[in-house]
Length: 235
Image (cartoon, rainbow, N blue to C red; front, side):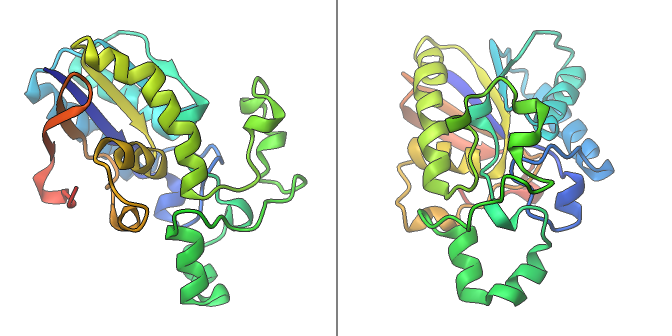
């Protein structure tokens, strides 16, 4: 039996401002730091000995992991992977969600935000939020940097990474913690729990709340639960 913990980063500054963030590298808010600290204490109480840690290239995810490691008293190195980055929101990036809902109308807004395979319009390469300008992604190939993504597109990069790098560890009875983002984790959960294209839009993953999954052979799920029951969502 092995344990997999999935945790969406603590609240970010743009989360608190209700803005579409995507690949923009914003930091945690004060609330987000506290959520990460609470997550660390919850994990410490579980007495799980983790063998491997993974996170994205974005600071809100790896800072969450750093805070967790501090709380559980672990100094082990972790792996950053661009494949675990948040979904790229295209031309919606940086905008307030309520304002975009009014501008686009509820139907179109939901299609861009929650549909399986309909991405928002592409973000202009000259935008101040363009990932092509961000030195954080200088080591990525041009075709690895999106201008927009649907959840399907996010699935197509996050899930192969999971299957190739993380599932083999679980099969070998290793315990793994992944600190990532709402949509990259939704994509992984879609695969793990065999969620349909239609139903995946209803999966909500709260910030800073560890999801503990116990698995046999890396594929058979024996148990799944959120550690903070007060903020748990239906899995």
